[in-house]
Amino acid sequence: MRVRVATPLLLVALSAVAGCSEAPRVYETSVEVRRFSVVRRDEERKPVTADVEVSYADCPGTQYEVVRGNRAFTECFQQHKVGERVPLRLEHYRGREGRFEWVVKAIGGCDRPPDPNDEVSFSVVEECSDLVVHGARVGFHCSRIPEKELVQKCPWFRRY
Amino acid sequence: MTPRRGSGEGLTTRARTLRLLSALALLACVVLALAALLPRRAGAEAPPSREPSARGPAARVRITSAAAPAASAPTSDAPGDETPASFGSAVLEGSGGVPMQKRGDFRSPFANPGWEGPVANVKVGLLLTRLHSYDIKEGTYSADFQLSLVSDRPMPAMNLAVQNGNADDIEVLAATPTFKLYRIKGTFFSPVDLHDYPFDTQELRIELEDEAAGVDQLRLVPDQEHTHLDVDFQVPGWDVAYEEARTKLHYYPDRFEGDDLYYSQYVYKLGIRRFATSAAFTVYVPAVVIVLISLMGLWLPRSLLEVRANAGAPMLAAAVLFHFALMQELPATGYLTRADKMMVAVYVSLCLNMLSSWAWFVLPPKYEDQIFRLGRALVPPVTVVIMLIGAFA
Image: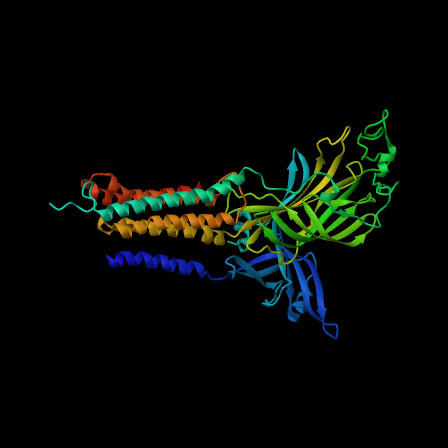
């Protein structure tokens, strides 16, 4: 009797623990470079940090991200040009606030080690559509919660 | 034969006292529940207060620019006289009344047929940098944002005014005839929608409209490419669900004869959604725990009636207090929120549970065992169904 009760309870508990400690996943995709800006230089005018703005062109909606990288990343990325399509590798994991987050690990073959104190990198994930009233366009509406179609095609945008 | 404890004629004084106390406890709970619900429902008859939307100096704060062209700037013929320049072309018919325009598309004296050239199409961009102090009970919040106005031709004198609140601080960062940039801090109001509470999404609005220029001079157009949230923008406790910007041609109910001028109004909306996990733990988990504890009493036989009773009435009191605490955070509504429906399900479940105990006093003693067994067999599944209905209704 005890086994009959305890086994399902144990399974439920294990499932819960397994669900909460989901392992990070690595995804690779292709992005378009929209901007490359050196933001900090050393005394010899050599770049120290740079921002790379990329858009996830293969994903539905408007998704773009500004990623700041260190000296090695900056030097490496200078070989790429704005408008070029480059590979991007990212890690998708469950964040501290209970939501899924992602961090870019490499762009265009250049490793980008994340810095936990980085407060300037950001991403915009939105799907916009025209707001039409009585047949007239009066504005726009941008959903910030990823739709099913977006998550199916680009699963790293899943937040919950 | 020894009379069975609690049987109809053989009730002991102690059992009678217990019965009386149970009845009193239930009565107190019901009174408490009514007392908790009544003030809110009474308040529900009055709609939430809203900032006055009428065009009047008290409701608006001007966002004016010194560098703006003076084509339609207010004139000041006499001290305290703020009659718009367009009134100069309005004609007074007869000996009194409202002067009216004889040229142009609008009769209103606020229309400006003298405005040269086509209407200025002004693209409105907005960068929301901070939103804080959101009070869902009042529907108020403070926001800091930057507003850009870019037009294809010189704009008229801009007198943008906040329609749904007050601009507390306005800083002009740029002001040329075709480009203006403001930094604005203000307090705003939006009506709240609590139908889905605690899984609700609220819409926070910023409404701007020019105080003087009608659509014969100025048309505002939302600029999608330049409408954003700042980096790391967040509203504590809430998730950003959507952004929306639109313009509408605002027509005021006639304030005077010939009041036919439309005004272009820009409306920015930020949809914020309450974090679901937090909502579930705040509302649903305590409610379910209260019901579960009360259900445990069903496994106690009649000989332990006092203990069994303690799993019912106190839980009802706990539910009422919990519901009362929830309602303190919300404004009056004319409808039931999802949390209200859940709490109604909790009340029904608790009453059902208590009825299963009272049945011993109402029905003949020969049914004692059947009542005990039926209570255990029927009440839990019925409770589950009631709670599910309460959760998803």
